[in-house]
Image 1 (cartoon, rainbow, N blue to C red):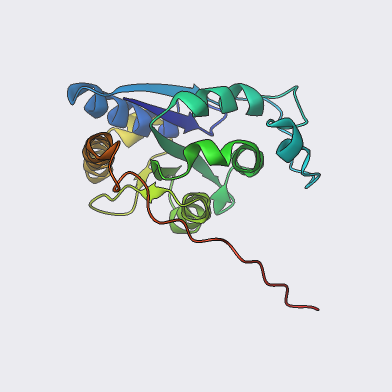
Image 2 (cartoon, helix red, strand yellow):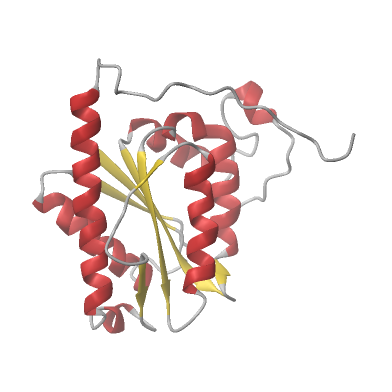
Length: 207
């Protein structure tokens, strides 16, 4: 079992990375492999809504990390989507990345467990957390619970070490992720593996 964690920060060793390291350490302690993919300073295209990914099976933009990450998505059993707070919202790069990742590769993540994590110096965490959660909820994923909202605080990674409550929340995410992964593993080959699929109907408000 493997968990893919996306660090949407420009800082490879910043507060977001500190939160993910706590999760990674707990996953390892409970026998689950993980990989942290750091977005860093890579330029990321915004989604143009061209729907080319539906024909190609990948995003039409092939000069940024989305398709590289998409191949990793296919191999993972669970996911953590993490981002720093910029102007009371997740970083613009991670939103652009997730928009395109879910369009092009969402089918590989469906019915798998996922959690979102946000990091901030002070404020904007709940609004940013809500934005990231919407990707999980619209894609029929299993939202991993914790003991509080999934956020850590600090101006840098050293500060984040002092957020003891935040650290316990991260560890609880990891522990609950392991639990869900084991449940899903045991459900394979049974009628519990996936829910009864309900066909999606789209309604336009202007006819």
